[in-house]
Length: 202
Image (cartoon, rainbow, N blue to C red; front, side, top):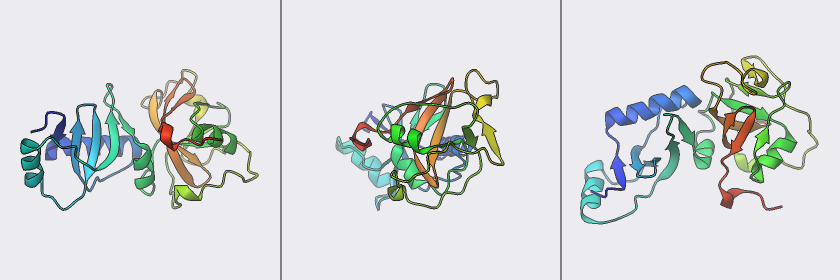
């Protein structure tokens, strides 16, 4: 079998699904899961059976196609991919940070975001219905995000906040009604994970 690709068994897949639910509220991954030597988790939903794929991997040095879903981090967390944020936009309910228009513009251009501790918040309960392609960056809404029910104020999770499982967390960014990407929250800074080829140029 191709040493660079590992087909996850049922137990391993269940562990990934458990972590995805814990971090992002994603309860099921309807794919055959692969793990690459770089720690990437990819999902395959084609017509080939598991045994057919195993046979191919044993006889031919091929790159398995599929959707890049997560990257496994050294601390055990999953880093959700840009495509997976869009794919699971109706299923992600945890670790969502609402940002304003200025921050969204910065983020989509590939810049890191520094939270306003008094006004930004992590939204642990949301129901996003819109497609990311419908984002209007030319609107006149320049106000910072509002803290609403079921949100955790960013002042409690940034700048050395003590809430467990929140500080140094993988998060999903929300602008208006759209999930626009992912990053890592650490000490009030969200590291940008938008792929270079997906960033806005001007």
